[in-house]
Length: 590
Image (cartoon, rainbow, N blue to C red):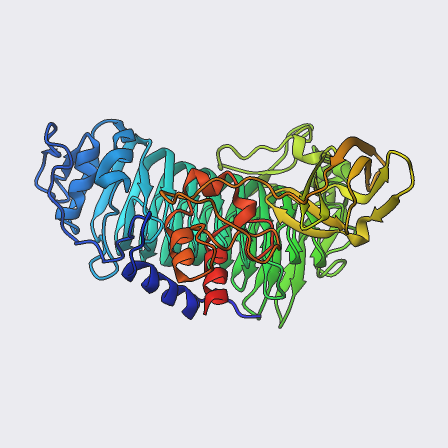
């Protein structure tokens, strides 16, 4: 199992293809590297820099969004915020592409930014074809401190985050980030990638999504992370973690209360409440919430590898679900990696075992892990200096703000079973799709004609399963369904035996029908499904599937016409539409 997610050749070929072949009804995508320097004024009405000369003793003073943009004019200078900044106007900058990140791969930001405890609100970046997307795209031997970045909306390609894309030997301290971050490669709430340096005393309340590596705080960590708290929802492909998707550095004094979802159905995956894949050092951490994936799923760590992989003096209470190599604390433990003095909650996790169970990790009950009882049962934790307890709560870290987890949090209770069903006719077959949450344990669907001449029962084993976030979709076909009136009875239960039922009355006509699909972009004709598989590969509606359709889907993948009917363009069939579906469509045309 490798420890880095590499970019594929086909992704590079696809990006080149999109950039060189404009088509009717589509907007071409500019893939040229943006210039390093930009005019100091994004707005002609407001001076960018108020005062200062950029030195350490007399830094440039920033009071507005144009001042943030002006940082690109002097990448090794010192800057300080003198007021809160309303950056919502950046949504309209650069023809809707939003704020242009500070620093490039070749010329990174090497100065300092002191937020002076001020807030930048509403920063928007919409550059889905650009790498190194964040307030600061690339930083090297710099520092960003005392800054709050709230309600950020960030969209990029590879190496995308809210605060810094790629940070080399950089100090990030006393920062708070909230908002959403979306990309296609390594994506995170605060910093996408660290190479050395530190991220400390940081808070993130974020939604992070990527078909690649996704981390609530950092995507790929090769530095030191300490005194941090993350809440939110993190969805990743091969690697996903509440603090970091992949860790080869050090993580200490860290806490998570989040939903972490791994979406890739592959053997080389790892999903964890704190870290997806670990070959570094993890100590004095805890994870709460929910963790779901396929292989190598753990309440704290999905997979820990190599002799450098250490998990110590930590615990997890997260609810954990997966298919193979699943553990309440650590999913998989390999090649000399170790677990010492750590614990998991058998009740809330739903897991009676974990990697290194009984040899470094111990499963306990909620009562044993909360209040004063924790000091007796979690004996490996240092309750003199590092940890503390309160009545009715799990242990939290001394001196780490917002790190309290009472037993009554909703994540400690099983999620009520959710159930919904939809039907459609495709090529004479009645296609049934049932959606439910991860609590589903059994499923049965009975289709019967009104005269009871025809009846067919299908159980869970006959359904194909896909996952989108915390929702699971189960799809099956009733073959060659004749015209007539039918009843459809769907019943399900969770592993506690709780039941849910749905009843539907259906009318099947003489002719097979497929759902109406709206045109994409400026194309006059709606997409079509030439091979009848339920996926509309003919995106431009001209009756054929060519590279032109790949270009159209790539260009308009974030449009309303695609996002509101994304299941029609789910080429991979995994229940999620993203850039991987565009790549797969490209494969089919070549």
